[in-house]
Image (tube, rainbow, N blue to C red):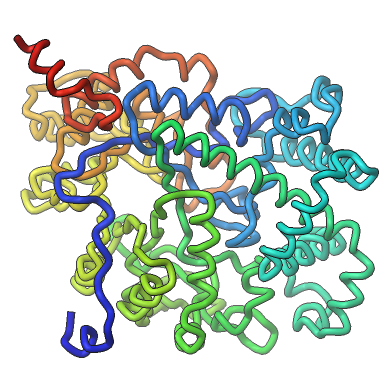
Amino acid sequence: MSGQTEAAGSSIASPLFPPHYRASGILLHITSLPSPYGIGDMGPAAFGWIDTLEEAGQSWWQALPLGPTGYGNSPYQSFSSFAANGLLISPELVVAGGLLHPDACRHHSVPSGPVDYGAVIQFKHGLLDQVWANFHAGARADLAPAFEGFCHEHAHWLENYALFRALKQKHDGAPYWNWPDDLVHRAPSALAHARQELSNQIDKVRFAQFLIFQQARQLKEYAHASGIQLIGDLPFFVSSDSSDVWAHPEAFLLDSNRRPRFVAGVPPDFFAADGQLWGNPVYDWEALRRSGFRFYIDRLRALLAHVDVIRLDHFRAFAAAWHIPAGAETARAGQWMPGPGAEFFHAVQKELGGLPFIAEDLGLITPDVCLLRDEFQIPGTKVLQFAFDGKLDNPHLPVNYLNNSVVYTGTHDNNTTRGWFEALPKEEQRRVWSSLDRAGGQASEIAAELLRLAWSSASALAIAPLQDLLNLGAEARMNLPGSVGTNWCWRATEEMLREPVFLRLRKLTAASHRLPARHRPPKGLLTAMRG
């Protein structure tokens, strides 16, 4: 850190993980939990999952973004950075809370198996209509003060979000830039008229957020009581069609019609000859800097209400991001533009009192990205599926790990480890086995081998997707980047969560010295056992 920065009175926060820290956890999105309502939620299965993690000697549960999903049902294309996904509301908890009669849930027709979002949305929205009608009619009137307090506390985002969702419904789901001009440009008279006309729908949206925030708080408290900490995920960019962009156009590089002048993506590389064209609007960092980065810090603060640590998606964009002119057919036409850099993290540290982050530093990583990450001692990400290219300096090879890192067997964007291995050419499969000091083996063995490798590595934290722990194949893949249709649909069954593999995970965790202190026998007992 430069002398000038030190003179300004700033200091680097303590690292997320203390020296020699060792722990482990599982990556599983809430939607992938079993439930009788077509999608995982904040209800009994989530509490049971925390019990399973605790019994298996784990310390962390990592999930994907929690916001209300839009395009492609992707948690990375949310209608809001601040709201939570109403589809995650547990009907069981609503019934137990006296806001819904049990009969409302008994004859639903949501299919089991992978998430059918169309059926789930219809069912859950119908339930929420009943819940709001019951509350509006006087059920659980004792909740009114808490609801009013929630609306007041979260008014800085909730008012815009509720109005945005009400207007989207009125305009048949059309993106906001296709609404009447006075609404697109947020003319005060038009907003006032819309608030009056749509007041009931607005209040219903706000009440749904009140319920999901209640349930999320209960789940977090239960996790902490069980010794489980939660890792959330914050997409770097926001969705074009979101209350974020509609309500905060000054934070983005938009034209006079409130459409993006530039969109996000990544340049051409080995995996994509034309690069990747994501289409998200890019930030106006100069405007954000003048506000003290208020909008982005508010995003972080909102997620930290639900989780303990945030995975910073696309971390490299804090150093520089690929800006593509709007209307370009591919990402080739883009160029690197500076991000907010160290100034941003100093501002965050001052506001939040720390930097509870994990950097998703994957992709095209340049020295400036590493310098920014290391200046603030933010742990980086290692992915074992990327480790076996035969190069000794590969940063994903465990021999090259530092303690201040998080290792994954794979991520939500990868194939499952078994599916990944089965898709490799035979020559590359042999190279993987050779890197594991084995002459060969079956595809059914590779997931367990990578778990062992991750857990035995020097990384402070080791995480595996549940699919890898269960040794599932490509049919259990969560997301195939660049595709739309079957992503984000995979769900575990109740039987999967009772598998003996969780006992084996506990034994691996103990053998790798990652078992939390609450699970370790007293030193005297260990001595007696060894004697």
